[in-house]
Image 1 (cartoon, rainbow, N blue to C red):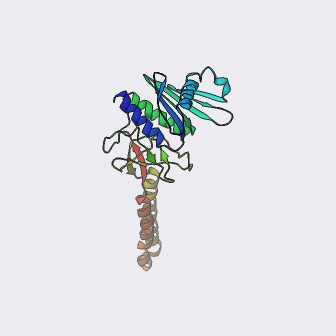
Image 2 (image 1 turned 90 degrees about the vertical axis):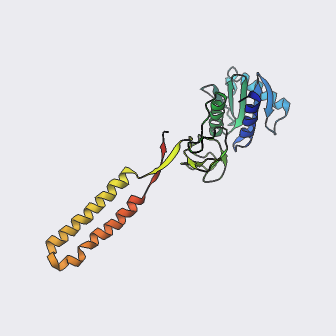
Image 3 (image 1 turned 135 degrees about the horizontal axis):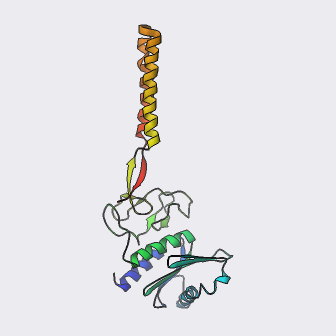
Length: 234
């Protein structure tokens, strides 16, 4: 993807995420796109801050370096992420979890390794997803929504609508091992009780013999119906 086209995609992507309060996209150190709440002067200041961030780390309470991006959090809770790959630099401020996931997705796109939907094959790294619980616009890569705090087990591909994992992998419904073992055990117990009733009571209790099997079989059927979404490495 040409630099200009990629910049436009990044601009649209960051602008659509909840939790990104401001951002600047630069080429060779010069701002070319920024969020609407910033002036050109403010955009230039953010780029200058990001460039000087490592050397001025004493101004912040915490500094973390993570694969070409770094996060700075000051005592007031301000979080800034900066990413520099090739000719493109991206600086953003907002929620730390959202920023780290979003810039990871931007990095994948810049490096030509975008995530793709396992169902329709379309690129989803720079797609905006909805939290299945609160509907907030979030990036790919979050396993817990930073807005409502609930765990995210699956997302819907914005292109085809099929379920995918929070990391973009295929999901399949599988029966958990514990439930499988429990169901078989319950069936065995039901059969054992029935045999025991017949041995003890003989023909006098013959009408009651099927009852334990039937009751535990019904419970087992429910247990066997329990399935969970599992991420598939494909």
